Amino acid sequence: MLTLVLVVILAALIFEFINGFHDTANSIATVVATKVLSPGKAVMLAAGMNLIGAFWGTAVAKTIASGLIDTEVVMVTSQVILCALAGGITWNLITWYWGLPSSSSHALIGGLCGAALSAAHNDWAALIWSKIGDGGWTSNKGLLWKVVVPMISSPIAGFTLGVLILGLLYALIWGLGRIGGKLGRLARPRWVNAIFGKAQLASAAYMGFAHGSNDAQKTMGIIALTIFGAQAAGTLDNLPAWAAFLHPDGGEQDIDKWIVFTCAIVMAAGTAAGGWKIIKTLGHKMVKLQPIDGFAAETASATILVTAAHFGMPVSTTHSISTAIMGVGFGKNPRALKITVIERIIWAWILTIPAAGGIAYLLFRLMEAFGWT
Image (cartoon, rainbow, N blue to C red; front, side):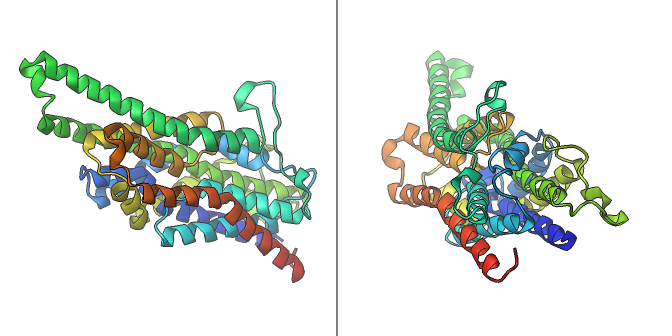
């Protein structure tokens, strides 16, 4: 059984690596599309900021570890986690192959729910739908508060914030143009592109940090959930000396430091590997971007991600940056948006949770049929 736990942890780290290169586009698509940075430099910036962001709190990890599956109804075994990861990884690779910016977060959550439901023999009580605590948003648990609400609100917020930030920047430029003189020169297109070309370095770094702070924590939660399940099953009672690090230092409210460090490193490595097909879809196909547009989109998306991470919500980086880019495009010219590309992206969003969940559900049933559970 210890071997299986280690296999699951390895699978979780593979998911984290794939998450890194699958979602690289989310961090750097705009800064590459605006030609502020070359793809290589942008990837290195994103990887470095992912690494820093991954150490910034564990609220999202705790949500994944103890806020979605009711362990009193279904035992979250290593087999359940393995099927959940396989479902998420399979869907990520499918959407990566087709260049669709689907959500790795929702693929993981869908896989986890599908595998748990299969293990519970279709008892929907295995999934925590809603549990309201006394401490406000940070203590609320369940799919409603931690998945459904942010899944709906974050795209709306991304779109709206993208429009608002671009509108404020355009108003500022217009005001400088009206003033005239030396300040008025700053409103000229050449100066605007030069200024926001520099500013976009900061917004791209902010986006990379936000991506790391939210996405890296999801795999931390999966590994912690695996260890909690193994501990409950007695697998960790008599660990050999070399595996002593697996024994959790605290309860379900603690994510061990080795988990945080390992996930941070692996995600940064995955980000460095890149994901150019999705960059092309996000950065070029939806709408043509200038540095000011990239700055607005990245700032809007990163703000949403950092806020969500604070409240322990596993928000989709893909959804927030995609809708922020849509909002910026709409703010520039509603007709500039390429509706057919947007439709493909939205379909990928809609299908992600049920598709990854369905794959995980069937994989667990297959394991049961072969007596591997």
